[in-house]
Length: 142
Image (cartoon, rainbow, N blue to C red):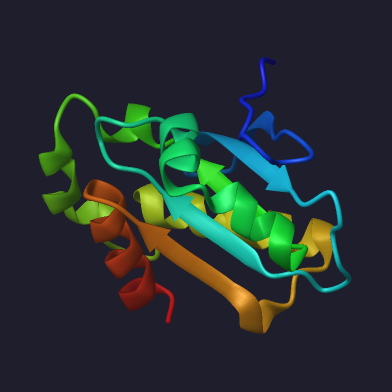
């Protein structure tokens, strides 16, 4: 497991795998060095041509997490979105019952439970295909 580094960050994320009945999702998890009780959780969804590491570096989200004592979750969805970004038009990836939305929410719930996340402060953001998935998540899991 080779962690990626963010300039100015005091700790590095680990790389993990989440599995449930729907499938498997690799992810990187960044914990603030000053993790607070009931921390906020930021779920960051990258675009089809990016990786979780690319998105973390480009957004500088780990620096924000350091400032607020929170957690950043970077699902590495690249395998689910390649070879075609158009996979998002497949209804299996637009419903709460299955596909990528279910995997991301299952993973988010797991991390929230493990770290005592403040459930009122779970934020989802994305870029490109990840932005589309953020909208799908908001619709399927309001």
